[in-house]
Length: 220
Image (cartoon, rainbow, N blue to C red; front, side):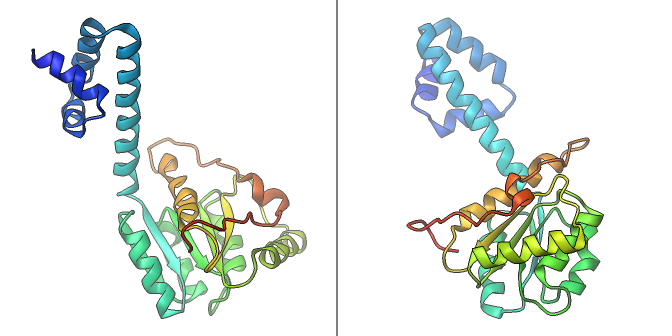
């Protein structure tokens, strides 16, 4: 009778049942499904469980990530601290690109404004690629994304920036979706695991096309 309820709860996407799933009863639950439910029903329910298991694993991994924010505007410091702080394990805030260099070995991803004292955002990205190729880097700017991509292309051409494995994108303040920033930072989850490969090349970084329009979604 209990196992029948388990099957029904899984099929209903029940969060209480998922707690049982996470308590090392994975195989027992899957076996119960395959014995007590019709094959199609069982496989669909198992798929729900695996999805929930993966989502929970990613959430736990995100809670361990350390994000460096380089921003000198107090308003945007507060915005980044709030939005990143509720998703990731820790947020280090600095107001100077040169100061940010002192923290590169302590973090998993970076969110930087373009125009900050010391090294600007593009110069900082260049240094990051030298020391930690592939560290996710979100460049946030009040300038139109196309103009920032043009500046990025000029930097790559003139300085010979190493783009191998680059995980980089440009986000326009007040226009782009903060969920997209989360998506870029979340790519650090894999490399936070022992032995994981950092080679997550961002196809946009190689040829620097204009940033996509994200109108109609929650603004950055």
